[in-house]
Each structure stands twice: as structure tokens, then as C-alpha cells.
Amino acid sequence: MLPGLEAAELPADAIEVGRIADAWGIKGWFKVLPYSADPEALFSSKRWFLMPAEKGPKTFSGVAKLAIIEAKVHSNTVVASAREVDDRNAAEALRGARIFVARSSFPTVAKDEYYWVDLIGLDVVNREGAALGTVRELLSTGAQTVLVMDYQQDGKLQERMIPFVSVYIDDVDLTARRILVDWQADF
Image (cartoon, rainbow, N blue to C red; front, top):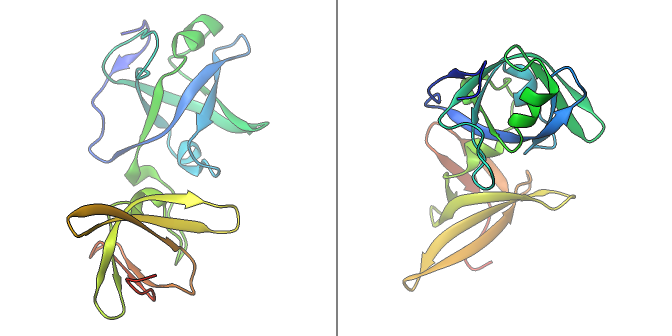
């Protein structure tokens, strides 16, 4: 573990939300590349959990906890400071670290808004009750978001896409882990 970093356990509901790109300035600030265009999860949590980069040099092992002092938008990225990181050298040692926050610390969303991470793994069923697949990922096409689902057909894994817009989405039930859609299996 790097000096100043506290070993920790990853929360059971931890979600990877970004990675540390590099040091920023000389006072221990660091640049963060968020995985979301709207990095509210980074701003709402005052505790970030770090894991080493999957590739490249590793300057620490295990899970470390950071107490975030401040995180803010700067240009097309986020910059942050933490109590445990007090100079440029310490910030540089974190380069490539993966950032996780507890899902429970995400801001509450408005009605009919969802975090993508909450939709992954949900079953998609049409109005007739036909299973259309399980959400594997979501794509942002600029104009709209698209559900990308996996389903089995004739023993082969297939892919189906449905625009995630109100015209096709009747209901999202996170508790039942199901999305009801106006979409036919042969589309």
C-alpha cells in the first residue's frame, strides 16, 4: 500500500465509475476520467475506493480508500483532491487506479430516470409476455440510448437492440428486474 493510503474492503454495492488519469498541479490534485458523461456519482460520494489499474505498472495492491475533499469539473474531465494525497508525487503514484463508489451513495434519480448500471441484467419482455432477452449493455447513439440485449435462438447467442425511449418502453420495474416493452420478437 502507498504511504498515506488506508487499506479497505470494497463495498458490496461498489460500482466502477472512472479512473485516475494523472496528477493535476503540484498540491496533490489528480485528474479523473469518469465513465459517465454526467459524473454525479463522483461528486455525491466523499469516499472513493481505489483498485490498481488492470494493465500497466501497479504502485499499490488491494483496495484503498480515499477521503475526498473536493471534486469538480475542469475542461472535459474531473479533478479531485483527497486527504491522503498531499503532493504531486502521491497523485502521480495513483495514475491508472480504478475508482469505485458505493451504489448507495449515488444521487436519487427523478421518476422515469435510471442509472445504466441498474438496467444491466434486467429481463426484457414484450406486451404479449414474450421474453426478448437480458440487457447486456446500453449504447448512447447521440440521439437516444439503446438497450443491447442477449437472447438465445436455436441454441445460439443472439443480440437484439431496442431504443430506450418512451415510445417503446412501457415500464421499468427494478424490483422485479424487468423491462416491459412494445416490441415484437421478430423486429
